[in-house]
Image (cartoon, rainbow, N blue to C red; front, side, top):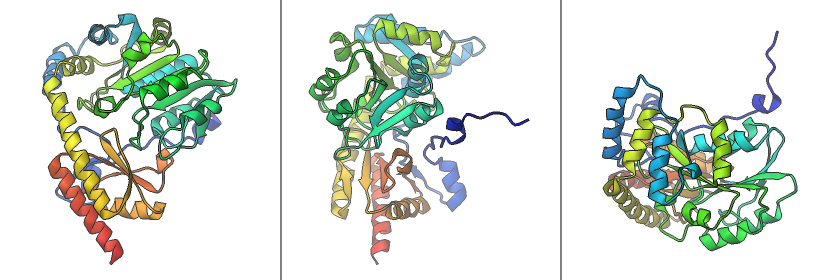
Length: 367
């Protein structure tokens, strides 16, 4: 007897994470590797978070409290009710909960081309009707998304700043967009890269205080706090939305060490400021280098650059050329941008080495 597999699962292309360092060493035998593919924190993790996670291991035999502790801390920090906050295994864990709570197979969801591939995978895995709106200058075209709403639309996904292009839209544009979205359509607003966006990017406290009932905002500790390996994130929405999500959320998510690390990371202002400063300096370093090479790139409000090449073949050639020299960057075909690569901003030393390798790869192609 053959086990029945739904068509939308059988045809599903899974999310492909950035190549691990060990894999590159095995493939090319390089001694020194810089992973600039997954937008991880080049400074590592918050020291306070590491210490808290280690201390929490003494209670590893006990089930965690489903995120209650970090929800209380977040509520106090942002002036919210604990009933307006939910925690999960990274922002993707919360995203999964949102979609399982409010959507069923066949529902229509709307987002942009060239945005977070993980959302595409979750939508296809649930058998949803995923509709993609073309980008405008490698950014969300909010006007066109609003015009693309239909009576069947149940959810809109927005990432701001956007991954993988790094583009952003300001608070005024978001608020104007939300006035065009019916209250019965949920807007999932992903702020994974918020801490790097020093421009006028809206945030969840302002959205909640504006009494917008149909917005769920996602945040993660993976990037600016360096906790990608622990999987801790949270969501903020109205009490009505959060209470429904709590019915569906995995009962003991997030883990005890992840929750302890997240709580401690919130108090590590020194580490956060160091991270933001390293990113600011690295952004200038990469902008100058890419401009000098004559490469097209998207101005970024995040911790990476999206580099646009002439073709998918050219993108593939540069990616593999850099890998052979020990620099891992990200192909973007899975994000709908086959002619582009994404380069995470590292330390000044990592950036300098990666820029040198990129120069060599480009010179080889032109010789």
